[in-house]
Length: 425
Image (cartoon, rainbow, N blue to C red; front, side, top):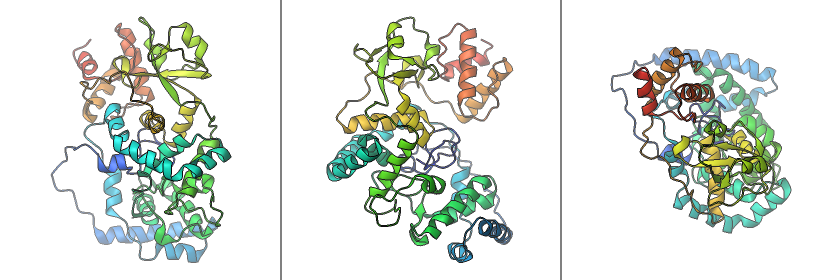
């Protein structure tokens, strides 16, 4: 649920599209790197026209909502005096000039302050967390880590009117299907009496509460742990929210006691094409190829695992388990899942990753990424579009190009790789 970095996928995050984080989590909202902004004046929308269009959309949506079982009085109270929120449009349109490297994201996510705060929360809510673990079979430190990343343990849950935010997204049109589906769920939540409209606050993308559930996820997975008849994920008491997060992970197959993954070392000459996270083998099979835990210990009984090298051959490598994939159901981003897993370990006293990240490797700008995608496609390595986002299609294309050039096919985009393409290499 880090609800949705404008193109990331999260539960609570909103739009399951494909990158890290969507609601302004404390990491994203407070520690975003500076970007270059076009200083030329933007055209001012005609306020009267926007207001009239919004009313027309609202009236049409009202009919659809009532047809789906929302009572007229619930709808009318929720929309009373409501107008589009320009801040939501601004945030939805925002695109950084540079994407963050994964180590920059992790540096902001796994701070000593966040670790210490989490350990304090474990001391304060340990009995609750262990009771939730016993009921849902989800390791308590993972639920705690999600809480820490999504809302800084409840200190940053968002303060925007969820109905207004989602109505703005729906009316704007770019995210109409998402906005309307979430609005229907939000209205159903109000109608069920889980929360009054005045307290239904969250992110600009509609992610709510301690664990940043979007309304559809709330309807499906939120639980009433306290037994007071309401699923209150906004309360000062985090019990409902933490139990809801555990229920979500449990429903997607969390295996209690199974680590999310471990840091590993690869032997010389290892085929790095196997580090794409798609090849699942037994730990015994990987061990036969020389894969070991960092420090040389055997992988141990982790069941089937896959290998990922999120920064290419120069960065850390991890053997991930099925539980890593469950975390990605919460937010479909490798960086997020790695942050949750690593924070959960650190909360129990583990140390930082051992291998160094290639911190000298500057992130490609969005324009450079688009250029890379176009050059790869022109060379016959189709990225299925040039949108400035490195997703699975682009990684596959990069790997294929690297193989054709006799390079290690790690799929990691670098400026050196871009320069090679530009010069016809």
